Image (cartoon, rainbow, N blue to C red; front, side, top):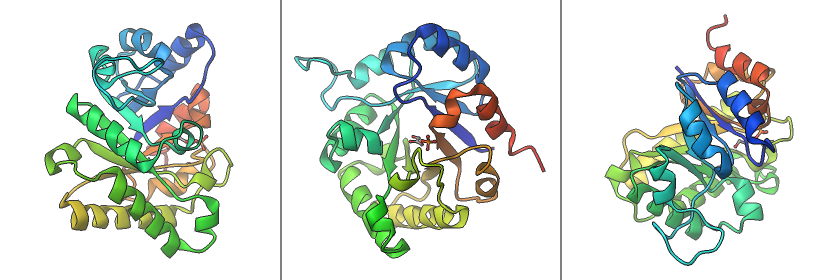
Length: 243
Ligand code: 13P
């Protein structure tokens, strides 16, 4: 069964709305990644879904770091996972590959599971799939350096081509799938990890989901916009059961 991570980004505004959406999409194969401020409430309200934070700081578990949230704090809420290196954190939050690596280490040290996001920007993709592959491998080489094989078992790689995020232009399912295969192969060659989970994100909607469902290398989806509309999101989850 494929699984779905609802990345709400900086939405919704109120806790009341957050609870309403979460209760509507509370399913076993769903992980909800709300803004930090809603995590505690949702940890109590959500019954079947699991929860993820959208980011974490690299120092742990406490200290003089105004505005930051540690892996220890996330864990203390009973939250199991964290998304790290989303292209919006790289773009607006100043995340470099080195920071992504430090954050990933901090999260893994607290036994959290990590979803590390990678993906090429449009200028790179325009040069072709080979360039995109080189870009993604370079990210993975830096983002995961020095992490033990045992800890890499708790890492999922989300391939989110930057040009596909929030644009309505998703990657072609066969191209996304071929990138997943290359990521899996690279993880084996470079890090000796036999099995690594790979998921796709970027304009996954009711219209685009069908093609992706057929691809075995895509184990799940990281969904932005469509995860805020329970009706649309439920249609995504159920797409697997439809012929
Ligand atoms: P959209 O689904 O809105 O394209 O966002 C994808 C994303 O960034 C998920 O993390």
